[in-house]
Length: 167
Image (cartoon, helix red, strand yellow):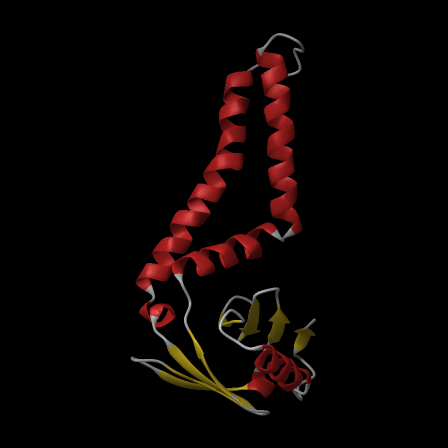
């Protein structure tokens, strides 16, 4: 099966936010930031005196609630802009055993049986080479038949290590 991939900056940034904020610790820290912000506002307004330094706590909470997403956005944007391979139109050839990706400046071939993990998200297929490095396949430009064919290929990967999370 052959198809073309084009990843936009906004799609990449949305994916990075999704991958960050689906982790339990990120959700917990964000909720904790809102709870501590509410406590500091109550203490600052004089309703409760739970917090002795409400201004310091408020600044800390705002760094968690606002600073972390801004930092994630800026880092994702910088990573996308510095990685020219992500910005290229990529021709992808997917078969039962391997995946070939060709761009203007690169040509790679990966054995699907050596894939660490294959995960399907709502708008993406992620093919992990290890815990942190993965290939992106956006579903945005794919037809329903191509998505179903890709799912079938990924389900038939013959590697016991591969963790499949397909819909």
